[in-house]
Length: 153
Image (cartoon, rainbow, N blue to C red; front, side, top):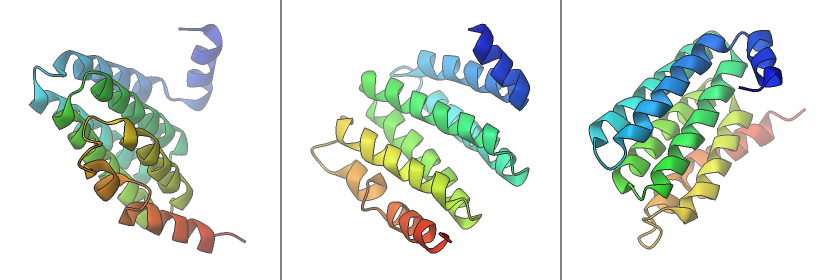
């Protein structure tokens, strides 16, 4: 790890959470296309880390969780693992909806934008699954945009 990145982890006190998520990423990578249940468990556990950070109002940890969810999505998309993609999107959506309910609309909107970005590149793009459930016109994205707009000064 680069010294600057290490200093930033120490400054934000993210070392433990980052280390846990990094190990989960390794488990996830090994499970793609071989152990679909394990990939799902990794997504669930990552959501739990995000929910715990949300309860502590720890934005830095939630941001790291979002980064790892995007990493999982890239891995699943590159591995053409449709089941893992769907499970990751679903756990990611659950986290985003909780963020939205707790008033973190800007971060929920950022996640909705990630859904819009990753959705069209998924192996299911022909049947519209991603756009219908997780894309820019999904209920999550619309609610996040409305709440972000209403929260503006």
